[in-house]
Length: 405
Image (cartoon, rainbow, N blue to C red; front, side):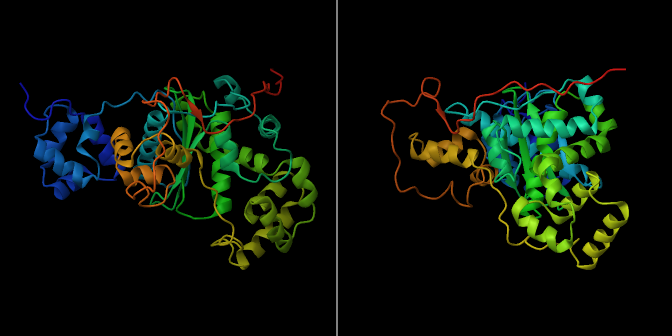
C-alpha cells in the first residue's frame, strides 16, 4: 500500500514543471526533493509526503491543492503556433500549457457566467482545408467581415471582434521574443482559445498575430496533427494571407496602396493599424506594385532602420482582452464572491489568474471597496446566467464553391 498524499496527480506535476520551464533536476535543486522521487511521482509510482509536496508546490509557485485536481481531457485538436521556426520546444510547451490553463480558468468561470456563443462564419472540412486556394482564402476573409458586419474599412479592435464571436483570448508576456501566439479548439466546450504573446509590445504586430490565429481557427480546425506537422510552413503562409486579407480587404486597401511611398505608408499605418512591412507585402501580393518597386521599397525600409522598429510602434496602444477581466470583476462586484474564495475555487495562484485574465498586477490580492450581494441566498449560475457580451445572431455563410477535377 502506497503512503503519502492520496489523490496526487502525476500529470499535474509534469504540466506544472513544463509550464515553469523546469527540468526535473532544476526542480529538485530548487525544492530539495530528489530527482528520482520527482520522477516516481510523475510516473504515478509513488505519492509524495505532505511536506515534500509543499516544497515542490512552493518551488513551482502553485498551491499544493493544484496537484490533487484530475487532469482534464483537452481533446484531440492540435495547436497552431504563430512563431519563428527556430523557437524552442520548451517555448511552445509553455505557450500551449498557458492556453490549457486559460481553458481551465474559463471552464470555472462558465459555471457562473455565460460566454458569447461561438459565431464563426465557416468551418472547413479536412478535405476542403487541404485543397484551399489563395483566392478562396481571400473570399473567406471577406465573408468573415460580412458575417460580423465589419464593413471594408479598418477594424477598430480585432480582439474585441474575436471575443464577441466567442473566442476566449489572453495576452501576456511569455519570455520568448520569437513566440507570437498559439491557438486551438477545445472539445470540452467546443470553443476556440487564443494566446497572444506580449513580449514585442507592438500594437500592430499583436493585431496581426490575433488575425493570424483567427485564420488558423477558421481554415485549419479539422486538420490532423500529422497534417499540421507535414504542412506547417504552408499552413502558416495561409494564416498569414488570411490575416492580411482580413485586416486589409483588397477592394478597399487597393485604392490606398496604388502608388505607395514609405511616407504614405507611415500615414496609412495609423489609419489601418497594420505595419508598414505588412502593407508592402499586401501591395505586392495584390500586384499593385511590380517586383522592382517592391525591392526598392524594402531597401529604403531597411535604410531607415525600420526592421528593428517602425514609426508609431511606441505610440499605438496594443489591444487588450476584455471578456476575462470583465468576468472576474462581475463575479467580485455583482456575484458575491470574495477574492480568496475565487482564487481557491479556480485553483491557480493569484499571479497566474491576473496574467491570464489581463488584470493589473496585485488585483486579486488587493482589498475591494465593497462587494454587492445578489438577492438570492445562493448564486446559482445554472439558473441565473449572466452573459458578458451579446454578439449578433449567427448567419449561415457557405464556403466559396470549388470546381473539382
